Image 1 (cartoon, rainbow, N blue to C red):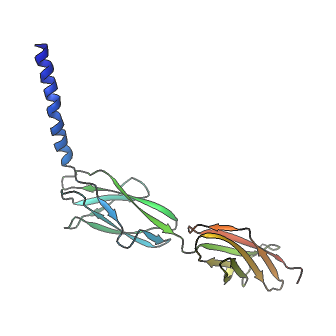
Image 2 (cartoon, rainbow, N blue to C red; image 1 turned 45 degrees about the vertical axis):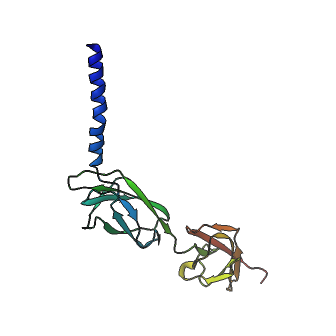
Image 3 (cartoon, one colour; image 1 turned 120 degrees about the vertical axis):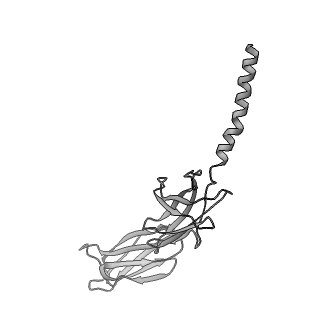
Length: 207
């Protein structure tokens, strides 16, 4: 009798597995996340994100979020099972994750999937030329970036902007005056993510 009960219990356990697999098969497949216009965008710009189906089961909508897993946004799926949204990426540079799930007409949710895009700085280097004596910005100063050999002139408020490839660079600044000013920086490493640097200009007593 004990042997029969053990056999029955074992048989019940073996039969539960196919039933469980059938339930799991009803869950829609996780969405495919891609970027129709490319997965990099300049700071302050907009980015298109497309969600598509990865399984055979139809879905009615997608839930998604950018930068976290809250999935607080939702978009309906078109007849072909895809959806495209356009987001404002903001001014924070670097890689940003996108999380999404598929939802079918019965509200069943797929496993979560993840994509990623990169926000890059419009300018490799931004900064301000400052008079080291008065601590006031210097308009009209010439800023030179070596070894690139790029020169720019500071605008109102002493602001300058330079776009160059990543690498090590040195800044030099001159101002004809009066009074004449000059200054230079230690080597700066630009990594493509954007850097702000204030360049101090000192009185040029030699002139």
